[in-house]
Image 1: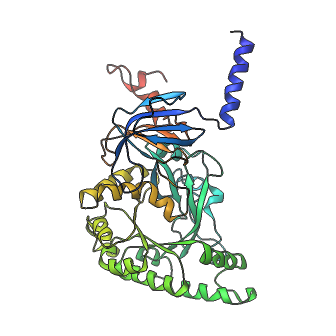
Image 2: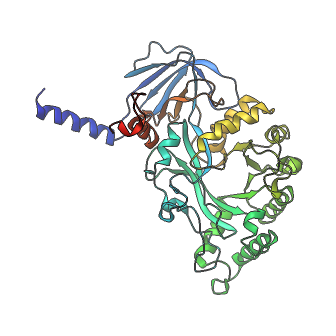
Image 3: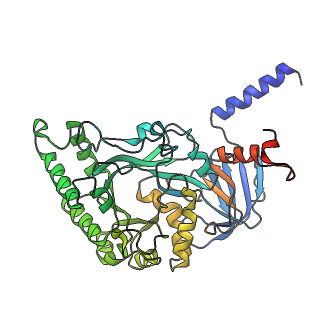
Length: 414
């Protein structure tokens, strides 16, 4: 082939890639978890144009550009990475690399209109690091700063796009003891300020003292259409959240919930979803004196919808361990898998995350049980495209891992 023809071929392939065209893929002999709370089955999956075309026990006659034999390995929807600041925080100690929170803003007001999605960077190194571990989406958070209302976020896809957001707008409110220390020295100050802020929704703009006119408009819209994620661990704080949400007719979610099991009857009666870290055990603070490893199992038995988060952005991949720990301590396996795949999208209004015909193909093939820490993602498929399975970490490993054990690292050429 001539150089000119080779260049045209390369340009053509780049053009197809830029237009988002995906080759058809057939996954055979997979132990498939569809993403709901049903047991796994031996199935084949056909993917075309980014969508799941068919799921059946035998698709061996189907034509595809690439065939992957799963050889009995587990196949799941791409997992939920929990509540993170992925794409908003590169290095916590570098100020220009953190865009997830408000601190010392000159206005002194609450700003429910603060929207971290405007600072989201899909080219952050955190995104591919998390994606190749088997995670396809996250709930992008406005992290706790020096305001009771932290700001807005939503679900975000790890597809590398600049407009990767979906679902309902979420507003984050912190009412725990740690953040209470920043707001007047008492968690009671949170409720005082929140009540006063919501009172201002019914006054004229010129009489506002705690929020701006833009904040008032945003909070009115959020109260009607959004989800309010309250971070609270102590049982008494959780009950305050339920009472406040009931009074102001808010759709609430509890994040943290270390003592949620203590008030599980009230949570179940309210229909409130709880997002926990199932590794929380023993008191890590006075807010979590009642933390226990079977928290997830107790909440599930009470009929509460349960999700997981690790509380970390750069190690969101630990979430598989969190879910596995919940299963070890009594949570049904299929319930944990649904909490890691389809349920977060359902709760936060995103597109369905299941392995079913007609849905977007976000699929992961695992080396072993996804909830075992010794397993890994062998292949990630996002929007029907095979992920190259590379990140800054894999590139650094390839560059600096010695190939000759007889030589020190300083002698290995980059």
